[in-house]
Image 1 (tube, rainbow, N blue to C red):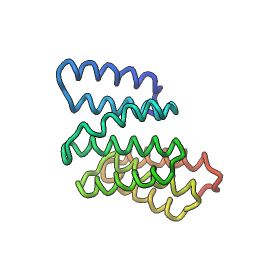
Image 2: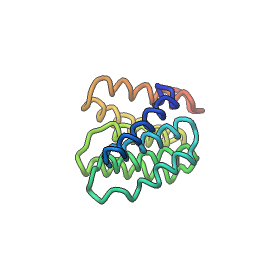
Image 3: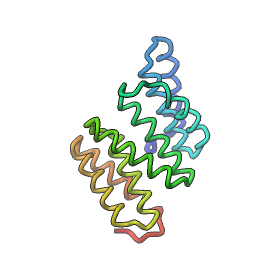
Length: 168
């Protein structure tokens, strides 16, 4: 979403929700609403993001579609992070990581959770912990693809560029 125009991504997710409702595809509907939440985060509209993500929290039973459950919680972590609720965001990122590790899932959600946790550490001057979290994001990314590793580096460098902490 960050690499694309959020408004264009939002348009696609809105079309997806319409089609998912039409064909009664609950999984796709939830996934599209998570995407709409992420679009709102990308544009800084945390209230809108929270609207999408909070309504999704109770839609899945425990153990069902762990990828969607992780996506919802990761979105809530990103919203909390953007709202400056650092302790809440840190806890949510850690919960996503623990949940995905328990379910033995390697995904972009795990990579993004490590990156988000690293950003929390970086911006609160816990540089050693940030570097450790980011190394874990790299290891998770490498298990998926070389491209995901490169994408992780780009996201992390962006985080470091918007900081008062000197570059590594």
